[in-house]
Image (cartoon, rainbow, N blue to C red; front, side, top):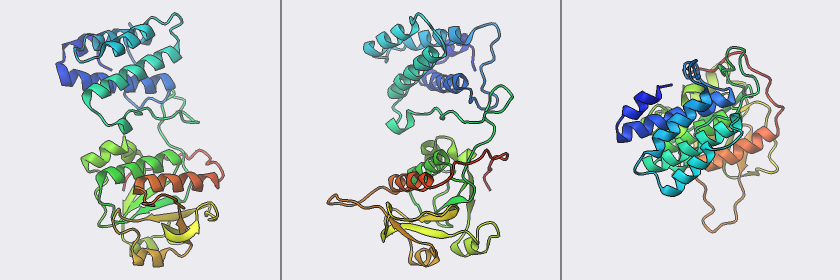
Length: 292
């Protein structure tokens, strides 16, 4: 956290970006899921007062619409300014800031959902829960925004890891990191070919299926408890080689529109929701996944 006085001294765009990050960090702190090193730590200033002070800095922004200023002022004046009131003010302030900055709507929900098992130390989340053996193989995804979205969905839904093909866009591409909203840093991931997928000791015995047209309706498909789902490129879909490797079968999302077309990230989100509906909830995993 940065002192309000220092925030006030920053200029235009830099001030807005820092304020947005600060409000986001405060939201995570309020929810008890602050990342290590970002916990609220000013002992001489209650968190509620700190939030009010940095909101006052935002209120002086010449680009802040009057309607937004009125909304923030009303939230600051909440009589019972408890943690929920703090959270509402931080979230509202951050969203108005991101709109001024020009961030995409998809980036407005920066706050990570509360985890079931925070650590004993300051309530900070240091590890993630996931469904062991639930993996996705991203084959030749070329769009950094799509690969970031895939990571974000995989992390949110509890996949253990993302595997990317040799010709897949680098998950650490700046635009992928941006659309992944930090999930690329917390998800386990590896880069390997289909052949290596067949040979790797911890993966070779997992059933493999593909998300592609011409398969079993997703409402009828029997998802495995553990497995690898192959998703293909935006233009070409899953390759013939990957379809051959998908020994468990092929799952298809039924569509009724004229175009009958879904973005790969959206399609993967639909699939993951259906997959986890069929699984037992994960027990807490004591070890955090890390990128390979």
